[in-house]
Image (cartoon, rainbow, N blue to C red; front, side, top):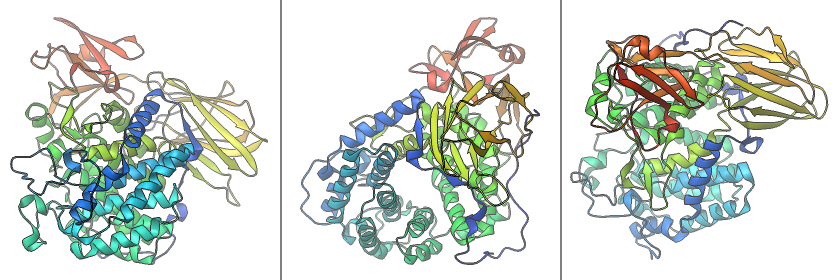
Length: 618
């Protein structure tokens, strides 16, 4: 088998700047791969299970009356319960200039927590979790007021999170009142929305804006969940509202023409906005928005760290700048990890489904293993992991703020590993049904195919081992095309079925094994991984201004140089020494230098040690 080479750049040719649509309401997704259901994937990877259990336990420990207290207090209603603190608690005197730790964005994460719990119920069938979702929604329904939105600096941001939670409540938790609650929420917030997309930093609220922080709302992220509400059956008004807030003139129109409109933008929210562009394509058939998302993602990827993370100090950069390099010594706020990873994984999932290009799966895998799966656990007091430290003197630490934005996204990330791993295409008259395997985790996918009950079990220790093994169960012999992602870094990849080598040339990074499967069939996929060096990017694909500042990478894993202390300088390392990294155990390597051995481990194994993502090579 020949390995896949090259990253397929975003940006298909299209005529004109004007918005072109197949038709309002056309089935743009006809050729799009289907997401699998949460209940169809049983995750068995220990790190994933630990993160899921941690976040779910914390969320289930929050009291309903405490969650709705900011909504009731700010709405002028009786507000029993306790303040949970941090960003989540209402503080009328919050002053962003001195950054008080309480009151920045009251009530912000409740919708995300409801979303995560709804997904948990869909995955596990846990009735207690569903009951908690319904209890929160009922309490919130009695707390909806326009006054709340008058008193928050983030009406659109909070509305977006609530939309997400209510859509997931309807779809996954089967809350019969979800759409009614969403309608009441929409009616309450609409007077406090601008009516059209507004950029960060623009004061559209007049006298209500108390200071600059009141211009930081993110109306440009609204369309994704509004489109999803429409698609799930909430009503046509949500589709109309989604179109109303598409960030076209200053963002998507420019990205569609491959203009670097991301430069200087708030990182997470503007990458997240690209998922709105994808929904505009999936629902409305807008080719312009698909181009914008593809081009925008290519720009973000080009200015990413070797870990896959991006946006040091929460800002996207101008292509060709030296900003990523200078950030290695100037900031410890390298990548807004849970939020950034959540936005990144959603976007790459959309793009993979539409383009069938495995490079998006490669990118998702890179971010997954080198950033968010190594997050510190969420704590019951709201202590949360926020930034991945990509500094030469890095360390994993909790945010100084409790219940920040990342406390909302980490529980959602923890639930989505399964749906990031597999996709399906149903059979047609001229081809069999297919299963696309994007991520290699210990897991089980269960589905029905042509009247047969099918099961695909992944076992093994990838990416710490170079072999992925899959076992098939089928209630009857059934033809299925198995599409296996072949990572771009893998040279000499090989697939064997029942011990026999299969000739399967990858197309856009996916190799196809099309056959009649029966119970007991085994697939082995060998993905040879070599140690390589990846220089710090200057924001242009395959370019660098600093070839001797590089990360040590093996397969999808960045190997972090473990440092005894942040204040101890890196030892001198040559390029040859770094490439000769010796494996000591499943998760540990060693680079021999003149001053001794330098321990190297993946991010998920760093623990409390200091580390450096990049080495200065001599």
